[in-house]
Image 1 (cartoon, each protein chain N blue to C red):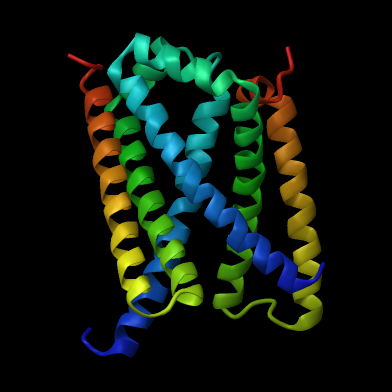
Image 2 (spheres, one colour):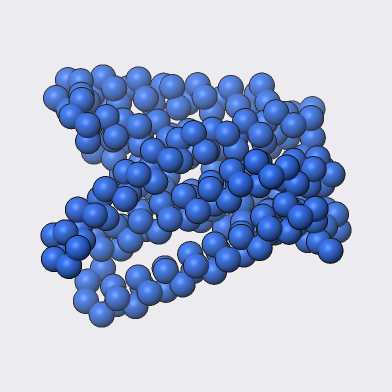
Length: 116
Length: 117
């Protein structure tokens, strides 16, 4: 969509999509965290070495970081104007891309059985 | 519960959870890097300031989750009348507090954060 209005409604809809996706994904992650006998390295590494669990972690990470960016963008747009807004939005995007890359690497390494 | 206060809390908890997402990324990275790095992360998270940060994150998580569901219901056209909104706000606040307390007291990870044996 090219019009400003189209972008805004697209943003609104995407924010709902990530909200809905995060409800089961966050509850799954909390259930994992709270159901383990301990959170020692062996337990955590073995958990995320399972392909399904690694895939769910990747989905959670993607939805979480995207949702975080959408939310922070709305907050910034409410309180900041002009060129500063553009700069802060670019900074926000860069920070989230960096976090997503780091998390992606971490999940990839865990799925392959840890640092090797 | 005044809906404006709850709305600001939703925003504040969202900001806080965004910051905590970085802790999540750091924790996963430490786990991927191996037992030594993970032991460092564990020592870091076991410190009193971090345990307070994590407990607040747990509270913010439950609040943001339930308040978010309430917002989604509004978007779908339910419960937007003043009385219904006040009532669902109260219910959501109580549920969030109960879920927070239950996770803290009854789960191993929660007891660890709270410092219970």
